[in-house]
Length: 113
Length: 110
Image (cartoon, rainbow over all chains, first blue to last red):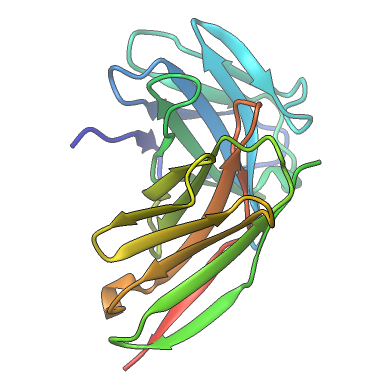
Protein backbone atom coordinates (compact mmCIF):
# COMPACT_ATOMS: atom_id res chain seq x y z
CA UNK A 1 0.00 0.00 0.00
CA UNK A 2 1.47 3.40 -0.94
CA UNK A 3 2.46 5.59 1.98
CA UNK A 4 3.92 8.98 2.78
CA UNK A 5 7.50 8.82 4.02
CA UNK A 6 9.48 11.42 5.95
CA UNK A 7 13.15 11.88 6.78
CA UNK A 8 14.78 12.20 9.20
CA UNK A 9 12.68 10.70 11.97
CA UNK A 10 14.43 12.91 14.52
CA UNK A 11 16.43 16.09 13.97
CA UNK A 12 18.30 17.99 16.67
CA UNK A 13 19.50 21.48 15.82
CA UNK A 14 20.80 24.56 17.55
CA UNK A 15 18.78 27.76 17.77
CA UNK A 16 19.39 29.97 14.75
CA UNK A 17 20.31 27.11 12.42
CA UNK A 18 18.44 26.24 9.25
CA UNK A 19 16.73 22.86 8.93
CA UNK A 20 15.15 21.08 6.00
CA UNK A 21 12.56 18.41 6.63
CA UNK A 22 11.89 16.02 3.78
CA UNK A 23 8.81 14.16 2.64
CA UNK A 24 7.95 11.85 -0.22
CA UNK A 25 4.19 12.06 -0.82
CA UNK A 26 2.14 9.26 -2.37
CA UNK A 27 3.12 9.23 -6.03
CA UNK A 28 -0.18 10.06 -7.76
CA UNK A 29 -1.27 12.65 -5.19
CA UNK A 30 -1.43 16.28 -6.24
CA UNK A 31 -1.90 18.16 -2.94
CA UNK A 32 0.75 18.23 -0.23
CA UNK A 33 0.61 19.56 3.30
CA UNK A 34 2.71 20.27 6.36
CA UNK A 35 1.32 20.16 9.88
CA UNK A 36 3.02 20.44 13.25
CA UNK A 37 2.23 19.18 16.71
CA UNK A 38 3.88 20.83 19.68
CA UNK A 39 4.09 18.38 22.60
CA UNK A 40 0.76 18.15 24.38
CA UNK A 41 -1.03 20.39 21.88
CA UNK A 42 -3.21 19.91 18.83
CA UNK A 43 -2.00 19.02 15.36
CA UNK A 44 -1.95 22.37 13.51
CA UNK A 45 -2.09 23.06 9.78
CA UNK A 46 0.89 24.99 8.41
CA UNK A 47 0.64 25.03 4.63
CA UNK A 48 -0.79 23.33 1.55
CA UNK A 49 0.93 23.09 -1.82
CA UNK A 50 -0.49 22.40 -5.26
CA UNK A 51 0.81 22.79 -8.79
CA UNK A 52 4.21 23.98 -7.54
CA UNK A 53 2.92 26.79 -5.42
CA UNK A 54 1.45 27.43 -2.00
CA UNK A 55 -2.30 26.96 -2.03
CA UNK A 56 -3.01 28.09 1.53
CA UNK A 57 -1.01 28.88 4.64
CA UNK A 58 -1.89 29.43 8.26
CA UNK A 59 -0.77 32.36 10.38
CA UNK A 60 1.89 30.09 11.91
CA UNK A 61 3.58 29.82 8.50
CA UNK A 62 5.56 33.06 8.63
CA UNK A 63 8.60 34.24 6.67
CA UNK A 64 10.97 31.83 8.39
CA UNK A 65 9.16 28.89 6.74
CA UNK A 66 9.29 27.89 3.10
CA UNK A 67 8.23 24.84 1.11
CA UNK A 68 9.52 23.42 -2.11
CA UNK A 69 9.07 20.51 -4.47
CA UNK A 70 12.63 20.29 -5.76
CA UNK A 71 11.98 17.28 -7.99
CA UNK A 72 9.17 14.93 -8.98
CA UNK A 73 9.08 13.07 -5.69
CA UNK A 74 10.28 15.16 -2.75
CA UNK A 75 8.45 17.86 -0.83
CA UNK A 76 10.44 19.87 1.69
CA UNK A 77 9.83 22.25 4.58
CA UNK A 78 12.63 24.66 5.39
CA UNK A 79 12.87 26.59 8.62
CA UNK A 80 15.36 29.38 8.07
CA UNK A 81 16.46 30.31 11.57
CA UNK A 82 15.08 27.91 14.15
CA UNK A 83 13.75 29.08 17.49
CA UNK A 84 13.20 27.05 20.65
CA UNK A 85 9.45 27.19 20.07
CA UNK A 86 9.84 25.44 16.71
CA UNK A 87 10.47 22.21 18.62
CA UNK A 88 7.60 19.96 17.57
CA UNK A 89 6.61 16.91 15.55
CA UNK A 90 6.22 17.89 11.90
CA UNK A 91 3.88 15.81 9.76
CA UNK A 92 3.71 15.77 6.00
CA UNK A 93 0.48 14.67 4.29
CA UNK A 94 -0.78 14.26 0.75
CA UNK A 95 -4.13 13.88 -0.96
CA UNK A 96 -5.29 13.02 -4.44
CA UNK A 97 -7.19 16.28 -4.74
CA UNK A 98 -8.27 19.22 -2.59
CA UNK A 99 -11.25 17.46 -1.02
CA UNK A 100 -9.83 13.94 -0.80
CA UNK A 101 -8.59 12.11 2.28
CA UNK A 102 -5.23 13.27 3.59
CA UNK A 103 -2.67 10.56 4.28
CA UNK A 104 0.00 11.39 6.82
CA UNK A 105 3.63 10.40 7.13
CA UNK A 106 5.21 9.15 10.37
CA UNK A 107 6.51 12.61 11.28
CA UNK A 108 9.88 14.23 12.00
CA UNK A 109 10.56 15.16 15.59
CA UNK A 110 12.46 18.47 15.58
CA UNK A 111 14.30 19.43 18.74
CA UNK A 112 15.80 22.93 18.89
CA UNK A 113 18.37 23.44 21.65
CA UNK B 1 -11.47 30.24 14.55
CA UNK B 2 -12.81 26.74 14.08
CA UNK B 3 -12.47 24.34 16.99
CA UNK B 4 -12.66 20.60 17.61
CA UNK B 5 -12.99 19.23 21.12
CA UNK B 6 -12.52 15.71 22.49
CA UNK B 7 -12.16 14.26 25.95
CA UNK B 8 -8.54 13.36 26.70
CA UNK B 9 -8.91 9.82 28.07
CA UNK B 10 -11.21 6.83 27.72
CA UNK B 11 -10.71 3.58 29.60
CA UNK B 12 -12.58 0.41 28.55
CA UNK B 13 -12.36 -3.29 29.28
CA UNK B 14 -11.09 -5.61 26.58
CA UNK B 15 -14.04 -6.99 24.62
CA UNK B 16 -16.33 -4.04 25.42
CA UNK B 17 -17.29 -1.33 22.95
CA UNK B 18 -15.43 1.99 23.01
CA UNK B 19 -17.21 5.19 22.10
CA UNK B 20 -15.04 8.23 21.45
CA UNK B 21 -16.85 11.53 21.13
CA UNK B 22 -15.99 14.77 19.38
CA UNK B 23 -17.67 18.14 18.93
CA UNK B 24 -16.82 20.75 16.32
CA UNK B 25 -17.85 24.29 15.57
CA UNK B 26 -17.44 24.70 11.79
CA UNK B 27 -20.90 24.63 10.23
CA UNK B 28 -19.33 24.41 6.77
CA UNK B 29 -17.57 21.11 7.51
CA UNK B 30 -17.63 18.82 4.48
CA UNK B 31 -15.72 15.82 5.78
CA UNK B 32 -15.05 14.56 9.28
CA UNK B 33 -12.21 12.16 9.97
CA UNK B 34 -10.91 9.79 12.59
CA UNK B 35 -7.16 9.22 12.75
CA UNK B 36 -5.32 6.75 14.98
CA UNK B 37 -1.83 7.33 16.36
CA UNK B 38 0.09 4.50 17.98
CA UNK B 39 3.20 5.26 20.06
CA UNK B 40 6.05 6.50 17.87
CA UNK B 41 3.96 6.27 14.72
CA UNK B 42 2.26 8.75 12.41
CA UNK B 43 -1.42 9.53 11.94
CA UNK B 44 -3.24 6.60 10.37
CA UNK B 45 -6.49 7.46 8.62
CA UNK B 46 -9.10 5.13 10.14
CA UNK B 47 -12.32 6.28 8.58
CA UNK B 48 -14.20 9.38 7.49
CA UNK B 49 -17.75 10.51 6.92
CA UNK B 50 -19.18 13.02 4.51
CA UNK B 51 -21.29 15.71 6.12
CA UNK B 52 -24.49 14.66 4.36
CA UNK B 53 -24.33 11.20 5.95
CA UNK B 54 -25.35 10.36 9.49
CA UNK B 55 -23.76 6.93 9.84
CA UNK B 56 -20.95 4.89 8.34
CA UNK B 57 -19.94 1.37 9.28
CA UNK B 58 -16.65 -0.29 8.44
CA UNK B 59 -16.10 -3.68 10.10
CA UNK B 60 -15.67 -2.98 13.85
CA UNK B 61 -15.90 0.78 13.38
CA UNK B 62 -19.13 2.79 13.37
CA UNK B 63 -19.13 6.54 12.85
CA UNK B 64 -22.18 8.56 13.85
CA UNK B 65 -22.65 12.17 12.84
CA UNK B 66 -25.23 14.53 14.34
CA UNK B 67 -24.84 17.56 12.13
CA UNK B 68 -27.43 19.62 14.02
CA UNK B 69 -25.48 19.25 17.28
CA UNK B 70 -22.10 19.17 15.50
CA UNK B 71 -21.29 15.93 17.27
CA UNK B 72 -19.25 13.05 15.88
CA UNK B 73 -18.59 9.70 17.51
CA UNK B 74 -16.46 6.66 16.77
CA UNK B 75 -17.59 3.31 18.14
CA UNK B 76 -15.10 0.44 18.20
CA UNK B 77 -16.81 -2.90 18.77
CA UNK B 78 -15.08 -5.69 20.70
CA UNK B 79 -12.14 -3.50 21.73
CA UNK B 80 -8.79 -5.28 21.66
CA UNK B 81 -5.40 -4.45 23.18
CA UNK B 82 -4.20 -3.49 19.69
CA UNK B 83 -6.76 -0.68 19.69
CA UNK B 84 -4.81 1.11 22.41
CA UNK B 85 -3.77 4.43 20.82
CA UNK B 86 -4.62 8.11 20.58
CA UNK B 87 -7.67 8.80 18.40
CA UNK B 88 -7.92 12.18 16.70
CA UNK B 89 -11.08 13.72 15.37
CA UNK B 90 -10.53 16.17 12.49
CA UNK B 91 -12.79 18.24 10.30
CA UNK B 92 -12.42 19.77 6.88
CA UNK B 93 -14.39 22.85 5.94
CA UNK B 94 -13.71 25.20 3.09
CA UNK B 95 -10.01 25.51 3.83
CA UNK B 96 -7.31 23.10 2.65
CA UNK B 97 -6.12 22.17 6.10
CA UNK B 98 -7.77 19.90 8.61
CA UNK B 99 -8.68 21.14 12.09
CA UNK B 100 -7.80 18.54 14.71
CA UNK B 101 -8.92 17.84 18.23
CA UNK B 102 -6.35 17.18 20.95
CA UNK B 103 -6.86 13.43 20.71
CA UNK B 104 -8.42 10.86 23.02
CA UNK B 105 -6.12 8.33 24.68
CA UNK B 106 -7.90 4.95 24.56
CA UNK B 107 -6.75 2.74 27.45
CA UNK B 108 -7.66 -0.94 27.39
CA UNK B 109 -8.05 -2.77 30.69
CA UNK B 110 -7.51 -6.55 30.61
